Image 1 (cartoon, one colour):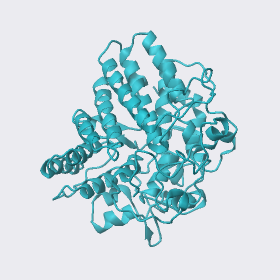
Image 2: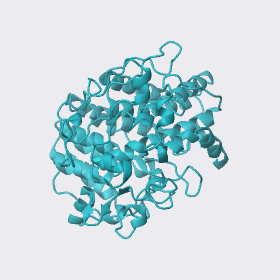
Image 3: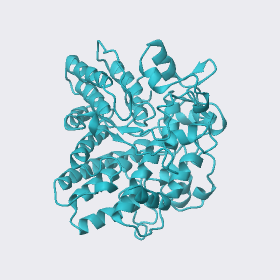
Image 4: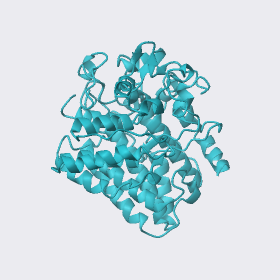
Length: 461
């Protein structure tokens, strides 16, 4: 399996280099046309490994670091991270590579190739898995940028300048795709097998993941229509039901280009030269998450932070190790979706509290992504209680940013005020400069829909 990983990672080398360099090496991206990517030839297994690793970086890389700062879980103190932390350096070039990531190699282009191949082979299980990955990546893209190219994307010959689909339409398409995936997972075929770096081809786990992802995307629309809470609850009740079903990024300590993305960036031994740029504390100044956990004497403080680990940004050695498998979608998250969606759909506070306490109790059992921690149980289950717990649990996960945009919880004070973000914490990223330069359907920064907010977040925090 490691040989396969090395082959696939070699083909996807720019993806991993971007994880460490895309903050300050932008030139190559600015001269590419993201709507006309180059297609090579690869086996289904190689395609799928590349797709998975691309998604790991999409979730953990530049976007993960930015949103961890905007959610005041970490602090940018040097070079580009300072202007990300205080919002002043965010332009259409800042996340140019991240806007391209879901579409080219390891993204929609490879996904469509894999889907066509698995369908031709009548491996419907493999097709369903690929469709889940497409829904996840495209749904996340809509979360971040709102209206995005999708229906005309990955078809350059016919649509060299793809139109923007409305964010609501993308969510509908993604939910439909997840339904198709669930049907296909119950069909013929062997599935991805050992090419699946996370679940090893376990279809039951993929089925639960699809339901949790669908619940996520319904939640992301609940600010526009509260009816989405009931839809989210129905999906979460079929979602990840045990920590053995957690979807964790696959990282291997000491394997070139496959180590934990956060380690590569933040640790003095990580190899990117960025150690010290992003920290949890600097002198007497701490992140809001640091202070919250410290004030509450929350046992997860030691899970996340270590004041003595100055070479690792004051992160705990466990959390920042090269082989740490970053949690991307988990049983804990699914329980907190149930808690919030229960309240939002008119359920009782007692029922929401049951789910919230179950999530807190789950911390008592050690998993691949956390040690055993005796987290005190909440006595109440208000939106504030639930979302603060989720903000803590989803440390370093961009989903905490989506939660905050929807609920404005926890109540965070912007570190600066800039008109281009409505004098608030940023609620979206601007379209990438490469797409803007090559696609006339992309409006300039400040022109709708390329403004400060997406349509699913009408109530600015």
